[in-house]
Length: 551
Image 1 (cartoon, rainbow, N blue to C red):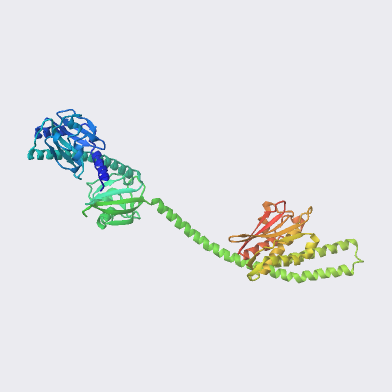
Image 2: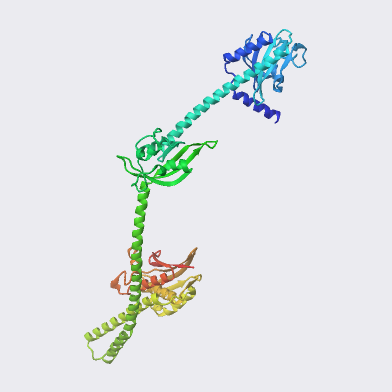
């Protein structure tokens, strides 16, 4: 260790004794007086040396005080830990120029100092005896001064230990109060037994549950009857072998052992216990401690959850059966709608043909009234044909086998525009599609039907006061694509946007522009592609259909 570090540690030890600048008691003063008598001199002092001072803690034969460490005779050699004896300081090369020798502070001639060495080997200062007369010490006198220096250090040690013990006692008392406060605050019950199984401590929660405090005089076999200990079902009183506390003492450790505490005038509690045996450093058994948790509400909650789970499971089975039946019913309904629609195609075509022949053959012979009736009949048949055709498309959208393959949507839109050329020219609609429409995995027939329905609807419900504009665009998302078909038509009110996907739902049935099947068919096609369809308002007016398709 370096001299600087060693000096720092010495100073730290000196300050730990807490004697610097403190009044010296009678014991220290007596030792200094005895030192003067042993040396046969009129003056002696107890010097403590810190960073910059020589502190004369107590003196005999003169009034002491503090002086600079640089002026101290004792500070010159005290750290060496050796007894120093000088008969005539005027003749000594180390001390003759010191202020205590040359008259600036005193005229010391005889000088003897015994270092105050701590048990760790650090020098705190000296026990110093001196005189203004030349003098010699015997070996016996020097030995007694060294013994007295050891006595001073022992007094320092005793007082330091007393302070430490007092501080430890205070800390122990604070810790004891803190632990007691914790034990009395927590909602976990704690019970402690000694090595014979006698209960020595119950905290606040345990006292509340059992209705009484610990009774160390109670025989362990009487614990079940005194503290109301029953099995987890609450029916049978525990035997001494079953008591969690005694089991922990006997077995060493218990975990999640449940029992019921049932005492008069208090609700029964279901308690979960965890405990362990307590041992000292020598391996001897001190006792056992058990922590108890009230799980009454938890177990009731679990039972309620189990009951609800069983009920949900039963309802789930019922719901599954209902879904199977609903799926079967829907399939039968779709098959029925397809079959009926298919069977209606020929009769409706025949009826329309006969009405057409009737109008041609008797064109000149029918009066205005008959011609009006005939024209109305033909329109009704044509409307019925279109309705049947829509039903067929709806049924096919649900029944047609799903044949997935990469489908470029740009090609799909071009094919649809070719199919709708006549309707486009008659409506004057301007239809545009961005060049970056994606290629997706899907059924090309169903996707073509999807876009044909959407574009046809946009033209059908165009606004009468402005030219019809329809735009098809796409936007990439992390999990798929959003394809938008936007128009500037009459729009769909927000309150109607979820209803229009229902079968036969129409925003304004009086217009008789459709049958309420087109968007239902689109929804079915999107579901088969694991996508979704939503409606938004086009900025400036109109409807934007948003198709969310997976990659």
